[in-house]
Image (cartoon, rainbow, N blue to C red):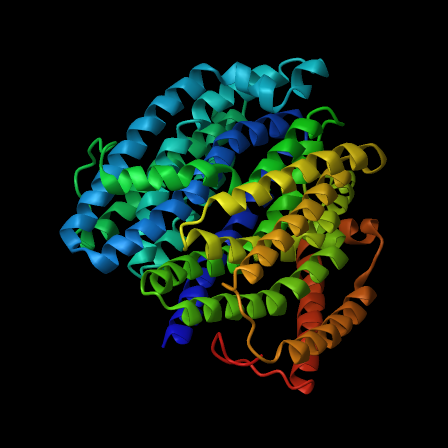
Length: 515
């Protein structure tokens, strides 16, 4: 039953996340076509990335990894009343701290822009730094709203309600689409409408989840609970986890700092490439990690070491089956995908070509990004946040060094490649640590699975290699022809991959079955 629940939970989160990511592509298509890749979009993406970075660092990173195991333990060993008290104390404490942080962030917006995008001022582009600071004042409160949304989502996930938290990001996409199409023409500086879209989205996402929390009987009145034993334990676990759980986001932020010194448009090119990598990462990697953490936490609380290891082993098998072909497909179809999704209006052929270079580099790291999402919960579920921190520090140091080495010959694509390589270092060290501790033990069938994957990936590469066409050919075609052609190539590649897997003896089974 545990195998079936893990598969069902991953499928539920994956489907809901798929809906959100598809709408997210529609959002990005609207933004790209309306605003292109230039001064205004560079400024907005920085103004959005700062609170979004802090959101992933605290809300979906250190906080989630610390909160869910403690909540699962309280649910396992204490009654509903104690769980409700823990949720209320955590919400009050988190909300109070982030309310102050949001106010300070808005006041210090110009300074933050100089810190996170110093090139905006040094490149002497009139108005770019000021525009980014004005938008940051509007977007910074998003951190407060979305962090409380993450708390509500963590509670719902712990109680097996995966669909609502996974569907919630749809509201961000709808809000930004409305801002770009309806609100932007009403602003003196149209791109500022996007910042207000972010603000509105934060409030809407929090409001959407509260009724479902109430149905569980866990929507108490938030209160300051600094001395609550559960809150203090969460805070102790969060301390080192702030770095360890969010190394990929720190790497992206470092990319932004360096890219602010490069040609105008570099930040936008990196953004659109990263968005495409985030699609399979969100649909599969984050979904699997989201479902695995409560399951691993429950197995650890119950003292079931064999069940704990089996969940990790099953997750790694599915990582290989899904992440490897996704990475190969993104690398080989980078140009056609970007031309089909974003190559319209203000987003020209050069923007497509520059974004494709970054996407091909980011794609090399996709399996590593997924592995980190799968392996890190193996530590956090055991309430070990120190080991991932040490590994993350090494990976971040490697990323900075690689950025400096690769940015000169490869420009913005070098930043993407550095992030991919440092992600592999992070994943490799996490894996080695779990193996050395005996927490991760592999079941039989890995050798056969490796051979099946090699054959399937070779078939996929052979098919997609035929899809190459000059960028101008894709740009000249109407959108419906681009979409139909791209869809056929993706279907042909996926069909070849799974057909060869089938012929090699692989059969789909519930997660944990022999591959």
